[in-house]
Image (cartoon, rainbow, N blue to C red; front, side):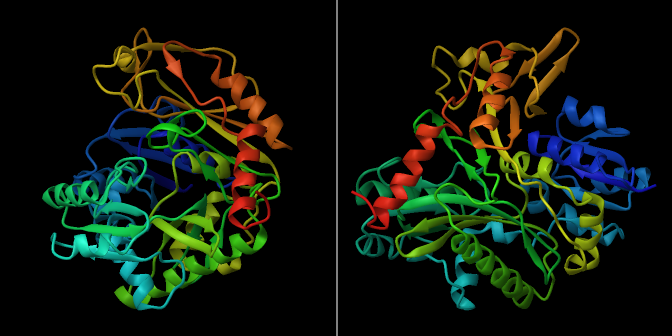
Length: 444
């Protein structure tokens, strides 16, 4: 019987845990978490609570549990060298080493990699380690995006028009970023529609999963501050309403070239998930950024649809044999909506700020899947934290029905909670489609 180590404690990892336990290989799951996720704990033989910056503790738990391999959920343990420590102990992992994880942890590394190997998808950009030259480059751009070099929890990107207005403000922000980060990447602002393409990689073979669209903005109609993601959807045809086959093929082609380039650059094959955040623009598909793991919430859209045994996929990634496996996803639509505290993403002096430590109750979620994120189980019930609380996923033959399933479920979570009612709805989908038609000159 296979013993598997899962590292992580969010809703993404709850979905991964469920997918591991669904395997016909009847694996036993051992989970290393920094906080106790009740959903993951209920699926695990044993749980170890610890810090992701303590690779020795992870290795000790892995050895005690006699695990065959590890699956890494979030970015933090990757950046802390947990995979390096596991591999040094003879324990393989589905997840890249610290050097390879620079694909996510260093925006400058990834932009330079694409440029060096002639891979399409880069916007106009420059990396800076000091303020020298920033003002001159800002003058070359019609619109500006600023990206700190390093992990920012999905919330560090600053966009002109959303976070600042003028070039002077952009320069001041760059100077501030350089005080807390080793560098800043300055890019041209792109216009288009974003999509997430999560790919499985064994170092040579890259296999795409169905594309997903995430919604970062806190409030309906894409208003309010950026968050870790308020929800996401995928379509039954494994495209998106505004996305055609050629755009998905372009995203996959870029990722395949990046997998080969990073192997040539480091001499080490990338084994794990290469999650490309892309934007389809008037001039084609552009790369926004890569993540070195599944997305949260996007993992909750695609993993429930997976019909190929996940343990077989993990072994194929580790052994470099993905090309021998037929990876199949069910042709269903999915809609994920996050229930969050009403104060999520708002200033600490906001009237709803106290909701971030409130008790909640879960009623009848019907057919929906439910995945715990940042939830604290106490003797008298479930309590929220300042982060996202619970992801619910509707799965159906159509997006409309999947959205209805998800909406009914998220409304069954009682307490001072909020969610985005518009994710997966027809009006928001029409808005995305119309946006692309205008960009392509097909409509006015």
